[in-house]
Length: 75
Image (tube, rainbow, N blue to C red; front, side, top):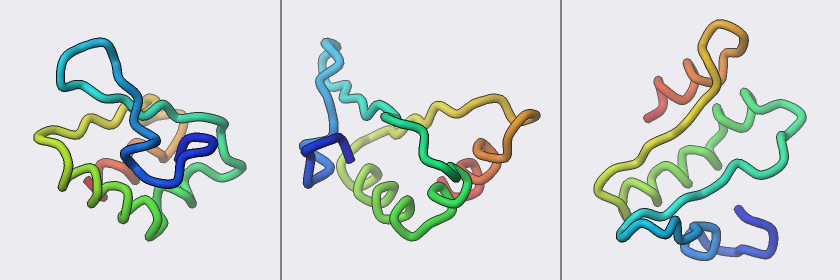
């Protein structure tokens, strides 16, 4: 979550666009692929899907890192 945030609602930030909330990435973890493949990611994904009509996940390009492939399989 966001520093100091304990719930998903606290971690989401107002974007300035009506009905659009954003969750920025924050600091890069030591092993992003491991985090994206975790049960914690699944829980956050499920909470986002329950709260939102549409969830967009921005990832780096597929060639240099595996992160986008992991996210694509889990969304």
